Length: 112
Image (cartoon, rainbow, N blue to C red; front, top):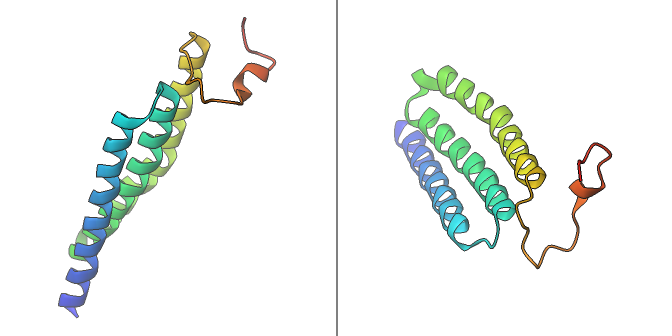
């Protein structure tokens, strides 16, 4: 049974590391700040959650602490990226020419 938990934990750790790598690659390849924030948030959230779950399988005694870290990450990571994107939009960071729709410009509290 321990070898099965070790196998599952190892696979989840490798998957999490893969998503973290793809997030880093996306930070280099995306054309503008807003796309980089999107890629960084989604890939690192999923990669870190998979890594934490893999660590829970490898060390069940750490489960509660790792689950609390994952829960904190699920709440803070998307929120912080949204705040960063909105602040970047407010100060006038240019978007990629491929961007077709800008929903933030339609908001009533948007300052010109």
